[in-house]
Length: 123
Ligand SMILES: C[S@@+](CC[C@H](N)C(=O)[O-])C[C@H]1O[C@@H](n2cnc3c(N)ncnc32)[C@H](O)[C@@H]1O
Image (cartoon, rainbow, N blue to C red; front, side, top):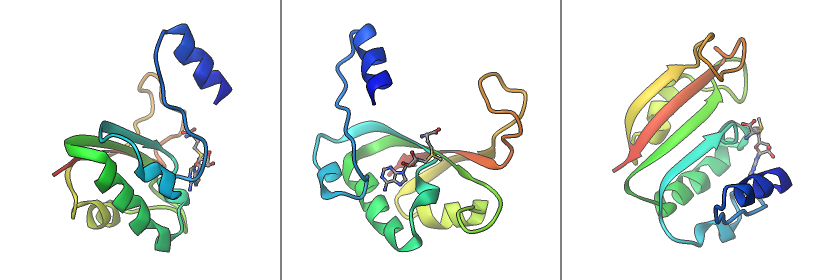
């Protein structure tokens, strides 16, 4: 958080940094937001905690707000199929995009085809 706070200060931004589990009740508090980006967290949640996470998104995102998600696309345990992601997120979100990361695109990791890049919009 130190590096992020320093970067925010340098740019003159006011950022509400929070440290803790996203499943803590404290994350339910705060104003509704226009955008959430989850870079590699969701696939670490135990399946029985996904509902809490989805409730958090539903509570904190404004209607029409965007949710970007990067998660594992293959392997065992923590990986998701496209169908599974649709099944999990379609009840609350319009599915705008679920695409594999493409190698060679500036800024992406090499060999990153094991990741989904998703964009959803809350209904
Ligand atoms: C694969 S790392 C991704 C790190 C970074 N966001 C990135 O994209 O490089 C997964 C991160 O999720 C965090 N994480 C896992 N469960 C969490 C939870 N319940 N609440 C908050 N963070 C969690 C871990 O601490 C870890 O930093």
